[in-house]
Image (tube, rainbow, N blue to C red):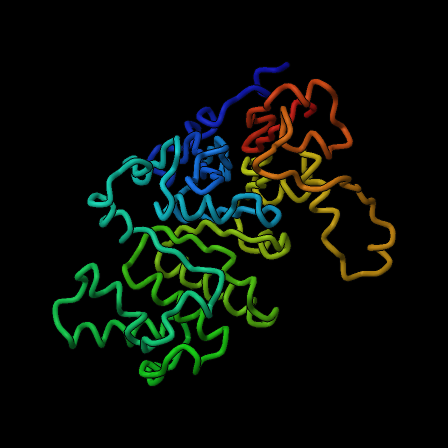
Length: 341
């Protein structure tokens, strides 16, 4: 095997200046206990995120895709320490927050924000829109007077395309797209450096999705933001992302810039995902090659031995079922966890 084909994650990161990396996730594992009986004795554990490593550079949009239940949202919530990791490191700005106590997370959480998937459930139905958007300003003491607070909330409403006159309305008086704009305004209120967009457009109509994506891109350019963009719609991720990672059963199986991933996917799972994306042209659609993924997605409680995709992969051999592959880089910036590549 050529030396070029055995480079590690750290080798790739070190090709860039250390100050370019805003988030460095190293061997992150998030497990949840499985209990049974009246005494709730532990009978096993679910590894929702299993030994995941990746880096996000300042100013980029890093896409994360995969089927429902693959661990995307668990990973996102772990990065913000809404879940406590079982192992690994979360280096943000050079400081490890994976095991930091709650008392040391205040400054970290001011610099990172999250836009949630559900624009209905993520907003307090009893709060006025202006109070929702302004809550981070009060919590982190970012304003020194009531006048400054009102001016800042008004500015945030305008930044996300909402009429400031609507500040006194409650969430049920807004449409789904407007509610998500309120969530975005709340996310940028603390002037963060990094925002996790967890399926931020999946609950919206297609026409509204385009508007929200354009808004996110405008805010990124205006405020110098870095995004982790999580979605299951591969077309959307392709449009907005600079680099993309593909997850399957809690592990990253492929990572590359968007052009390489879509034009030359290496992992059989990534290839099958991309071939499943419909093409608007019926002639082209009829001539496309299809990869059939047989079987069901295994339970996280009973993962197959070896690589997680081995029980469904058409290329799998006995070696695949015994060896757990590590993410390795086979070409510049293109990593894959498959011993057959």
